[in-house]
Length: 191
Image (cartoon, rainbow, N blue to C red; front, side):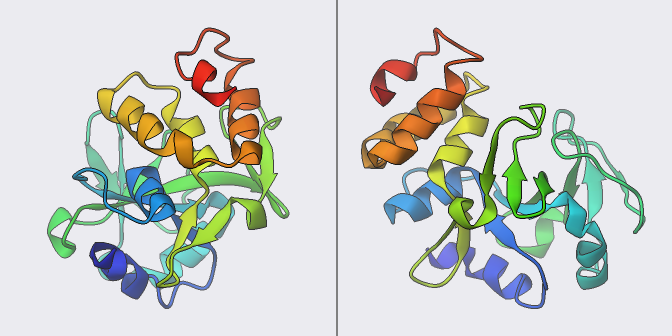
């Protein structure tokens, strides 16, 4: 996955946890590029925004509206919210556009920002690493995010990866989709 080496190099001096997220994380999990990607999503903890500001100064990322793509300046110290707020670097800075997605956390747990604090998992459990040492988000977490959408690429991602999930990951994903979406199309493949 040499195409992600630019992220690993760019984050080399970042003093906190980060994870490759989205479709690239699923590719790292199955150890192959399954489809083309338009960007690279990197997850960081919202509580580490000061570290993001200290590390990435030139250029400083901007705040991007994920629905419209509209960007505005981001000032260090400005609070941002996991979910709606995304940080973006200039698209021509890297081989692929790089976006920073913010995650809620509580001490040693990742918290799903849409789960009202009830869906959580230890940070160590959501962290996997490629053979090159690139940290990436566990597939059940990526797929939980993707389960909210009916985009064809998200459904394709699920079907490409579902057979690779061990029983623990399958059960966890099933148990966190079913309460919110009891008729979700992915549930039969997770039982």
